[in-house]
Length: 635
View 1: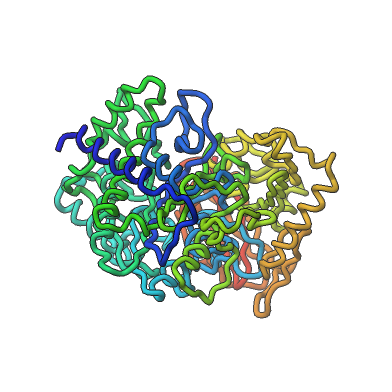
View 2 (view 1 turned 90 degrees about the vertical axis):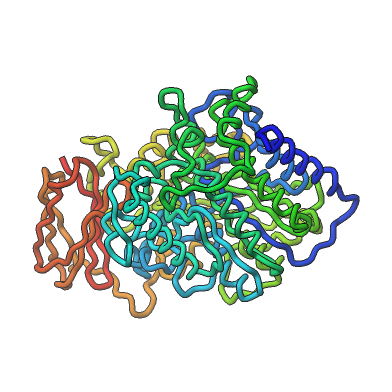
């Protein structure tokens, strides 16, 4: 079968589907199979120019310069959600919300509690993990008789093992950044490490896992593997469907595109990180696999190049579009399409560097659902929905029960067409130092700091910028200074403590009208306060004092950590002048990666960063149940 035949077959599958499932009335449905498909860093905001150096949404989102006919057909034959949002705009926090129905700020994962013990101000970012023993979506579905599968990017467990320096423990076999995966011993190490990740993710409620990426592509820690491979993940998804048997199934299918390395990157005329990369480079090393059921990468490149009205650099979207089509064809061939719910969305946006902010470019995402037996063709739901709603919706449709309290609500009545009214009065958002609430007409963003950071600000402390040698009077929302820098540079109100935007008149959030709309601002602040007070023991400015729960030791003025000199050319001194003599310190680089971890053996300890490049670092000192944080500048 040649490439053109494959394209015609896939197109016929979709067009036949679109004609076959136009319902005159409300469809009838039983417990569906569920396929949850997630892209990475994709906003729903259409780009108005043909040429763009950033991610684009799908055609059904209104972007006329992309070609995604399969996904668009699914969306138009199902339900489109034009006002879909995520609660947090980084990968780990958003995926946690998707898989639990809870805000990331409620996380009780080891890494998060280590950084921000209960009773302290919490900064949720890429430190959020699924809990080892707490119930989540796949675990609840398993109990309800579902076969559960995981394919693609994780970034929700075992953050400490994503560091290169940790790959000598827990059975991981190290290899070098420049090692060749085609070398048999190197490839054996990569296969071993992939299998460890496969087995680990299964412990969180998945019967099947394959083509697992523990984090971002660069966290495979190898130059050759730092490329996207849509076919590798797609084949794993199809294999799961084949293996599911007669049980209802749930598949979490998480793509790496379009997260960096940007799939539209061109080097010497080649898309070196995507369609022109070696298809044998995978998350399990160098793998020979048969992808002949899909159009070749060259055919996809030629197809988009021959469409002069489309953005040629958005060819990655058609690549992904064909992968979705292969899933649809597999379901149709097995007689499963009619009673399978397909959800397509993204973990967060990156439009105009909205990632790690609470602006629309970061929080607004594509979202559609297709289910011939359960959703009327051509449906739209114009009200606010959020990624915390996925778990309660899926559990409701599956007839599954959970003992865990969730923040989201079920959309079952919405997708069945029996409810058109709002399911949320407002949405809540959280990230680092920022919190926000949104109605359809207004958004309020608050930026507040923990007591230590606020004291530094009040005393005129200058925080390190992402730009080497530069400082600023306020810190970024998150530890990743690169993302913080671009978020701040591209959003003029980023550091302002109180921000109010009229979303009807100013959807691009250029005018902060807080001071001229105090009544509306107060109403939204009261909504924010009401939500924040449900986070027991998590103080946040004047909104909630976060009284420490019983057993948590509150920091007193006698417990101080001093770090000097700062900036330094290589040697920093930690001085513990408090009552806690036993302490541990950790140092993170500007990307939030742990690079040092040591015990403090005395009240004064020297920390050497001479072996590391100049730039910005973050140090955390843990003394009993108290945590101290300081930004370091290495000059």
